[in-house]
Length: 423
Length: 162
Image 1: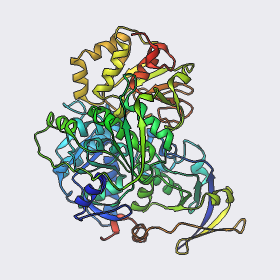
Image 2: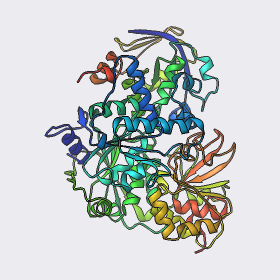
Image 3: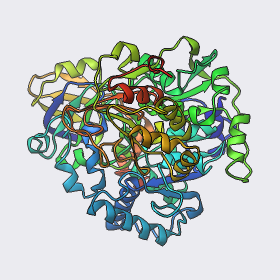
């Protein structure tokens, strides 16, 4: 069995499973945010009308809540959703509630690793499609809708079809101008946005072993954009050190037998160019240098994909001592990352370059609030999706890129390869 | 179970959930209110065109992107009872079935080409068959896997007993 199969076998109390099996598996951790939480509340209300009353959840200590999409409250409805979510958490005794303006808070996927809320070998479900992110810790992390999350909250279990696994071996030495974002955009452009539909994307190879945890998280985060059920990386010394810096809780890592792969792909990293995904699909890739004539109105450094500490460091390295030419917005993905960036002097670099620095929120990434795009505006962004209307008006455009490319583009006002800006 | 209605065709692959129900409406949880914005990213008149019992026909990988259950809810409450497509994104498919909102029906790619917008369809779920009443052609539907069929027959995951 590979690592995904082993975790499913453990969670479903079976000696072994293989792809295609349908099982009910025990959930170790569960997350909702300020969109999926009220969605689950609505499901409970609908069940209540049909005579099914929910008095308790399966285990309030294994559930956590993030306020991230519409915070700081975008309007009256968003504010009321937060109030409703707070009352609901209190009713069920859910104490891990990361509230904005009250210490640590941030984007749910960022908190999952930054706070070590999920550990290697665990089965984690989240009410958001980018739950896949957390698979970089060696966990089985799967995104689900409101009904499935409501069911799992009640029963501590959910049904799963054991997925087939695609293995991506990343080999060679990663050049300084290449980030994990370039690698995953290249993979998605090769296999397509449904290339891993219902499947697992597992990453291995020396280039993965040599990557820090935050870069690994970019790989698994974007597996969602290839349709994958989950993205996963086997835990190693890097994983253990990352976890140990955050929690003393013990865990049992699960390793695979490196078998049962549907397909294997090898990528030689030193040959890659900085890559940008053009509107309106994450698979619509081109080399940054091919797009250097494209003028942009905004550069955005934010989201679970592109506003971790490493992402901010990379952007700051380009922006240091320079001035941005277009509107540039930097939103660290969590309060703790904001504080670290502040202490390292990164926030000074961004603000002196002319960028605005804002509080953690998913707002602009999903076109909800806090900097949405007008008709015909073009944005180069460290986020994960560029569908029509994703970041604002349906006729706005988003180009997806690494923090290095976005920062270089902020300086020139055009899509720019980081190698083409002076040091 | 036999369903009858008019089909609304969007001959495009990868229709994502940002198109089916745009991000700014994610804060809304009232089902009736959500239905007014169904498919707004591709057709702002969608909710006015659809009558109760109608179908939606689209290309590959329908419902990709965000896990928002608002997407099948908005379609279902606008009147759609089944979405017909060559393939579906996994979370959208689960949400349709487990929430009991509508049926995701998988068909051959060639079926998409042979059914026209506004055709009248009769769908027999037990026989896995679509009858296009307008042009007289018949098409097969991929049978539901056993667990999916059981959940559909129960009316959603909540009513399913392991």
